[in-house]
Length: 387
Image (cartoon, rainbow, N blue to C red; front, side):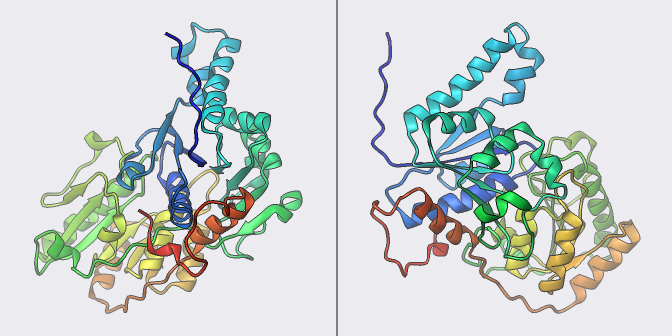
């Protein structure tokens, strides 16, 4: 039986992100989507993810659309029985039907877009925006055919930094909107993490690698846990907590010290971070900005990434947030001394509200002409709610 076309009466803005090694892309878009949903309560904010692991979205009550990976359909061996034209047509059909049925007021992408959805938006005249964090080599980034297609057709380019932190090159500058850092804002849990875990009198050191999917995450975790194993043998009041990330898969190769607390995923990691005694983290965009804003003592160990300058980000944040300390020379002995120093130091904790998500939502509201929807009063602060 043929299924007729469904007439969608719910206004929506579609968000689309990749998700393979980290959670930064979907985290940024989820924060903007939450702020937009608070600004316009009737609106639908579906998030289409090309990749795996959407627990973050489901835990925050976002409608999630699982997109087949373009690279698998277009060139994966499992699709080898189909001709290139058949595979290309199937990929386009997924995207065309999604845009045709949702009829979103606009689509927001993060960094690396789904080319099929970009093409579908161009065909239908659906306005697009790109959320783009700073890139080490912008020309290399622009050489990606998907990126080039989107960035030349996007009406706005949202830069989740403050003006002056990164100057997007050339012809794209006049469309750049600097929102400031985009992170979630959650009420602080006043109960120390040790009491949340039922471990009164303990000092809890949290180790996190964000989503956990990068190949370099394993040696990072192993070094941190081996160092903490030494410290826990000498200081019985210290406890290690590994927040591994839902994309970490190398469990068989990871040696975990006894008494280490392990959590693959926390829907609101800020509740874990905010009252930990110390956090050891790499320098992914979302993780480090959230740790900086929470004021929690943090040792940042920047990782090497193709497009992302983690070292530069960590040093910049350390210069502006006293709770962030960057460790470039990484050995067990240097890490051990820094952990002990941070655990024994008394560092005041000051939370800093970062309003990038609400500024992005306000801009998108005007760009996509959402003002006709029922909205809250102009003086409402959409940072108070991301539910």
